[in-house]
Length: 266
Image (cartoon, rainbow, N blue to C red; front, side):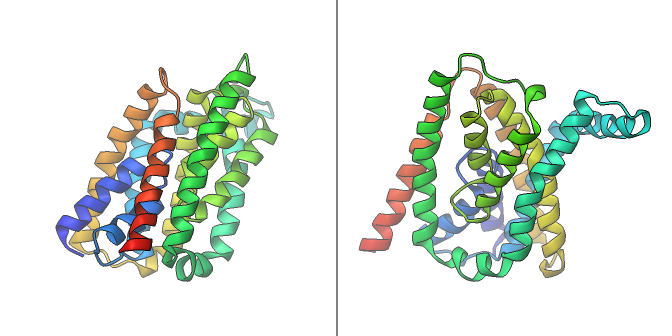
């Protein structure tokens, strides 16, 4: 791993983590397309740690208010919106945490080495995101705000996130799709998705921290993923105010087709 490659992969991670295009797939596909040596899962998680820090910087006030709200609810035995949403995020984290913990070896040894599966997941989810977002826009006349998300909806979003352990499905892609199909607004599910990334990435980092050697390449990769992550979060929050997720769906399918062409002909 050179410093140049660490920077490029950090930038790719920073962009792809928050856009519904699967950062895990990109960290595997791009080295494959350019015939670079594939990075380890531990290095990929280090890059994810950089983007987690980006979320904490952008949404620090939100997380702080959610946490304080939960503590106050316990002390006063009352229910507040912040306290409720904090526990909903905790509950939504559980499915992905369990799947990641028990299927870690299978994911790393089997799925990460199968470009066909990754490209197929990339294309299929692209089509589902496109169709699901269009359906939700026409089906729901009044969409739900962030604070209106229910426990049931949070659980469904959490279950959908569990599928993202397979590179190509995309953590943000699956959760956004699950939210949109339940009538949650683009802005609300995007915020919920960003906040939900923190405990999941934190848990994955803890699991793999012993496998990670903190070299200068790793540090530079983390820094570049953090910086690009901040930019990507701000971009998506502004973009979805006036646009849908179609462009990301098309991009996923196009990238998958490029990978299929290389697999078949090269």
